[in-house]
Amino acid sequence: MKQKKPNKPGCKIFVLLISLLIFSFAVCCPTDSQAQDATAQLEYRLEHLVDDTARVNVLLKLGEQYCSINNDKALMYLQEAFTISTSLNYTEGIGKSLLWQGRVYYYKDDYPLSNKYFDKAEKALATTNDQESLAFLYFAKAVNCKIRGDYIHAVELYQQAIQVAEETGNTILMATCYAGIGRVLLDRNEPEKAMSYFREALIFKKLSNDLKGEANILSAIAITFDQTGATDSSLAYHYRALKIKEEFGMDRSVASSEYQIAGVLIKKGCYRDAEKALNSAMDIFSQMDEKTGIIISKLRLAAAKNKQGKPGSVDLALEGLAMARKIDNPNLISHSYKVLSDIYAFNDDYKESYNYLLKYKTIQDSLFSSEKERILVELEAKYQAEKKDNEIKLLKSETEVQRKNNLLLIVLIVVFAGVIVMLTYFFRLKSTAFKRQQMLLEQEKIIHRQEHQIDEKEKQLLQEQLESKNRELASKALEMIRYNDAISSIIEKLEDLNSTLKESPETVKPIKDIIRELENHNKQNIWSEFEKIFKNIHSDFYDKLLTICPDLSASEIKTAALLKLNLTTKEIAAITFKSEGGIKTTRYRLRKKLNLSSDDKLVPFLMQI
Image (cartoon, rainbow, N blue to C red; front, side, top):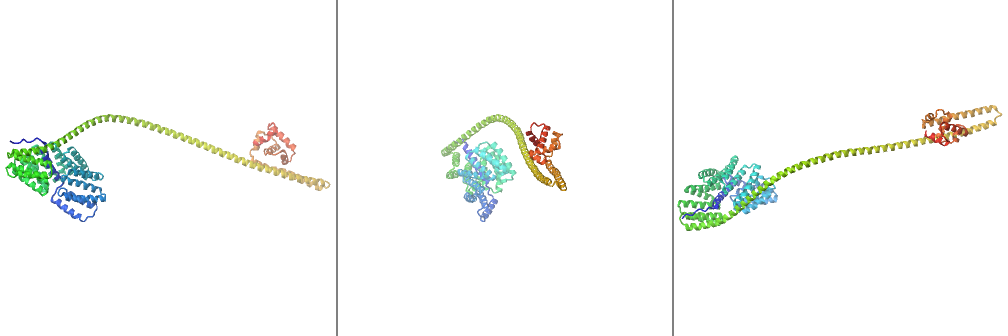
């Protein structure tokens, strides 16, 4: 009895995983003859370079070229590039060498180690301006996530890579990332959505004139048609892709296309054509020592031979199983058990078919449990994301209200602040004006004080000058007194002589004339000189005195002038050639005319005029 096919997603996902893994090899690492020539030129150039950044860049290019062809050789070049970059502190070289070492370990199927190198590379590249390498890093990390079944992070990383690639204008990488998202959607059994991404990627590839990339996108579209059951469309796209790949000598991609074409041909019942395509694919995989490709090609070739009733299908499938066990790949082992079960069932050996089917189910259950756990985690993540989205919407609503309130509060604060600023401004203006006024007042006070000091000094100076003049005038008065005393002494002697010569009239008369002339001359010259000095010192004294009392006599005016100098009655009498009694009488008349009550007030009054 025929076995019913198990309704598990593992087999379908496995087939897509294998095809897409091979497809990703082809996207990044074409190996045509031109590339081989370029590699040879780089290796020749490397021999003549010293340990500097130029050598590092050549080593990185060689590591990139050998990445999917010769893993060990690629690692040798990349590790040397890392060592030189570290010694030169060449951050960009360090980041790129780590990035491509991670890519090498990806091709060696060591995904955990690959991710470790990618994480180190990201830290280094984040500090440089090498956006191209950073975009490719996100793409490479996305591929690793997709292979592990971490579709959420894979899509996020693809989108990151698209964003960075768009900034740098790298349409080829953008197309590759769109294709990567499409392959994730294929794994999630969403072919319609996947197709839209593949067509988007195809547009970018055509705009970039990237025929190799276009071929890989055509292969992805063909796989999508195959998943929806449109086998004719699938074959048409596969053959278009195969033609381009053969033209460019893309051996690995050619083998992948041959393998995919064989799968579609088997569905259509074209077993001989499928066998021919598989033999071609297996030859290429063998030349490249691509074990995964060899295993899946052997298993599919075993199924094609079995459908044709050809011998050796079981042996071929067992060879594939042995190789799968050798590389310890649960998916390939499970797939081998399923192919053997189908072969034995087709040949009516239900016991063996059942045994292999049990083994297949055991591994599938294990894989399904992991897949189920992953799906549950993904669903939980979706639930949490939706919950978070709802919370974000609520927060946005609350935030909008809060934003309006904050806006109103800000407006009020701005208005209040404006009022405060204006008040502060006016207060400062008023304060400044007040301070300026105070300063002016202070300056006026200082000026007044200085003017007062100047006036005081001028008064003091005038007083000193007046006192000096008065002293000069008093000195002159004393000189006049002494002069008068001398003249008086001479006159007295002449008079005495005259007395002795009375008997000689001829002599007496001349002597009397001399005495008279001395008296007249003395009176006129001495007083004239004194008055001149007095008027210079007290220029307005006579005017003021006559204003007070216009009817003063000349004798009274002279006596008043001498009293102003604070001279005694005796000194005045000597100067004026009058007796002291006559001077007292003149003082009395002067006091009466000036309406002064006592003689003590006469001198101070005259001194003030």
